[in-house]
Image (cartoon, rainbow, N blue to C red; front, side, top):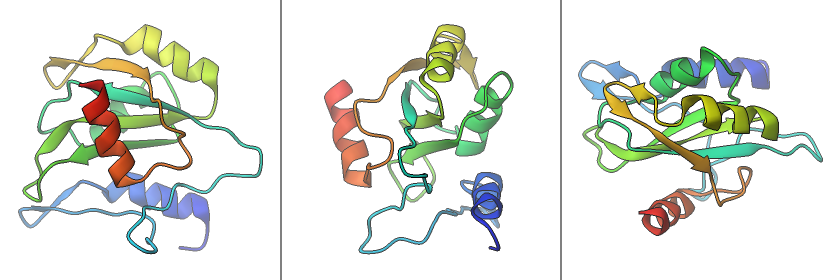
Length: 143
């Protein structure tokens, strides 16, 4: 991609989409199997929400549309438990400001997404330094 914005747009558009009967993953290239967080400017802080009680069929684009109707999330991610494309039932939505994240919690906590009421809370992990293992550990700790 020619720019970070173009790469983020492509990721948001195509990540977790079905292609020829399979769910595809589109993300920044990884080094040593650790996911690269979206780029941040020095001193920039991000605010990540933990989204639970997701329907098995929820994808990142569903979260993007759900939150994007009233808010401007930086990124959305659904965690998957199997290669068959079944969601683990939780994910993350990241915002640029604490105020926007708090507003999303107060507005959308308990609202239905694809037939299930979602639960929102601030993630206990730093939005800029999470690995897949961290996400699994966080979900287990919050269950």
